[in-house]
Length: 130
Image (tube, rainbow, N blue to C red; front, side):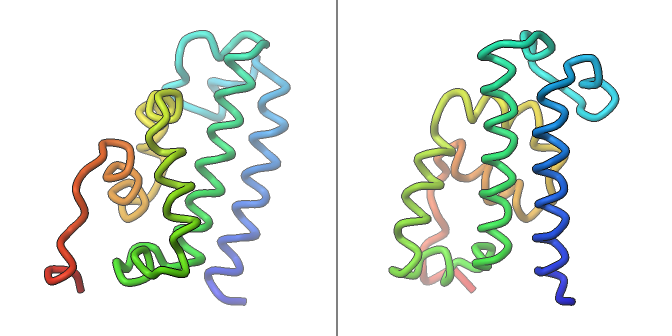
C-alpha cells in the first residue's frame, strides 16, 4: 500500500475518532491539547470546533493527495476550484482561531502551507518557485 493510501486510511480513522470525541466532553483533555474556552460544554461552540477540526483534516488530505506542497500543483489552473475554496476556509475568523490552537498537531509542510493562507502571506513569485 502506498504511503498516500495509508495516510487516507489513517485520516478516516482520525475523523471518526474526532466525531466520537465530539460526543464526550469529559474526554477532551485526554485526546486534544489547547482546546479553546467554551468547547468543553455541549452546544454550538463545541460543534463548531469539531466541525473545523474535521475540515482541517479534509484540507490536509487534499494538500497531500494533490501534492499542494509543490507550487506548480497549487497554482495549476485545474486546481483553481480547490485553491479558492481552501483559501476561503482558511481566511474565516473561526478557522483562524481554531488553527491557532491546533496547528502544532500538524506536520511542518502543511503548517507552512496553511499558515500562509490563514495569514494571507503573499505567494512566492513564480520565477522563484521550484
